[in-house]
Image 1: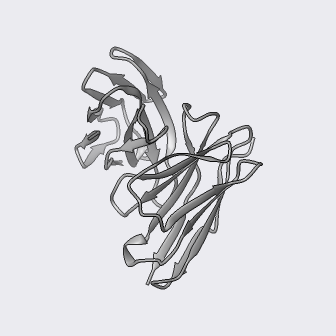
Image 2: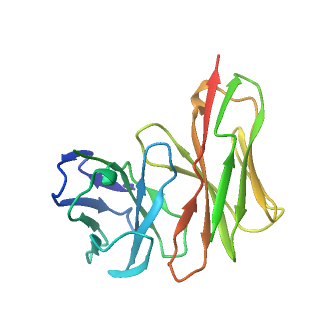
Length: 112
Length: 112
């Protein structure tokens, strides 16, 4: 059974650019959640997708957007990057929106 | 607002020296308390889910317990490979979907 995978592993961008991060959910999981983890902090909920629909959103501005595809993989898009967007971005998948979330290895984003 | 507080922030133990990590929470309508382990630069690894006061779960040297206001992660006779950051999270049934609210973690270092 393949776990949650994310790409790329690391990324460097400059302020104002746009970035797309990708996540493949664990086999059989139909729900994907995205989190942002700043250094020394716990993960912060960005949003969740359940069967291709957004199913909840945290306190993040609209320049953070996402998609979920029919195979339940997902993308996180961030426009107009700011220095504070530098963080580890984590994707988690679950069997359904009420079940245990299993995390991928994350994408480390550095904004210069 | 839902709050999760973990203590201590950091803990240094000698191999074999048992101890406990604390997670206190203030939420409306708890729908599960989760413990994760996170190694540096990696995604959180699921350990336990607890749903009701009095519930206990065990895995190797780890035991998690839950009361109405807090959870403890007991580590018995730890080994150096138990060194990691331990994250506590709560799931609350709100309009924000199935989001997890995390604490900032306890960084555990086990020395020989």
